[in-house]
Image (cartoon, rainbow, N blue to C red; front, side, top):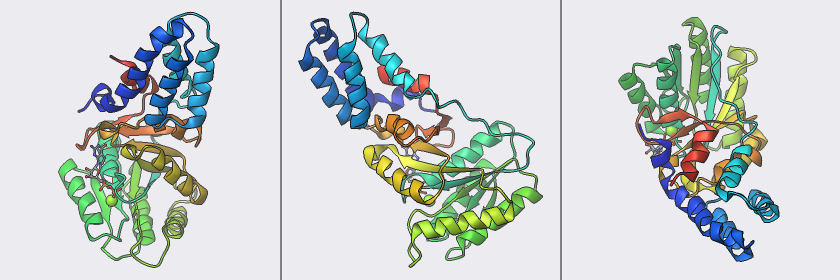
Length: 294
Ligand SMILES: Nc1nc2c(ncn2[C@@H]2O[C@H](COP(=O)(O)OP(=O)(O)O)[C@@H](O)[C@H]2O)c(=O)[nH]1
Ligand SMILES: [Mg+2]
């Protein structure tokens, strides 16, 4: 399993590199050093709004250790992002996984199933991406390899029907949690958002009140563009959280701050690599430490 430290190498260069240059400058309250850090943060895809707040705060600060001040500032951004745990013994928790094509949904669905299994829960994964021929097949392969119970839709089938069957199966088999993978792009005339709303309604029919969670999988290599995508989804489906995939390959992990602060979405998990155990719960102190380490 990859570590946070390894995964954040590329973004860290920007955040810490900027701070290193900032330290001598700050002793003289050097505006040039602060401008430089501002530039580095923008390059790491921290949103301009947050960069503005952070830089203003440093401009006002008195003498002291700039690193601990910065670390505290970064950490405060996640004050309202407590760790998540699946409820136990309440009947299946239904989790709908959404996002654009290639963001990492199918891989993440398999990883989530694996994680739940390791936590002693009884998970079920469902392949409701019936639009891509390989969509269902890919999840089925993961499920077989990881020993996960799976409900798989036929290629070209109705994804809402697959989601319905999966939730019914989860209830019947007394699963604790069901993760439903969806399509990221339509190859039919049906627009993606309408399709997702249909899937949602059919889940609610199978188990009133479900889905309990709707998590958007965001590709960390896209940086701020991932935030733009999340906004579009948020307007159409009620999102309850975000998963950041591919954090290991990103030099723009600064956008993670805005997913939480500007979009108001709690971050649930992050993907640190391609294998099954490379999904870890989002841990704000680990994330900030990973960025600040040197
Ligand atoms: N390095 C890395 N690759 C990932 C991660 N999550 C997914 N991927 C890769 O991203 C690609 C697209 O993933 P997939 O799950 O098929 O995306 P989907 O189209 O949203 O279902 C695959 O090659 C995955 O192996 C991650 O956390 N780290
Ligand atoms: Mg997929």
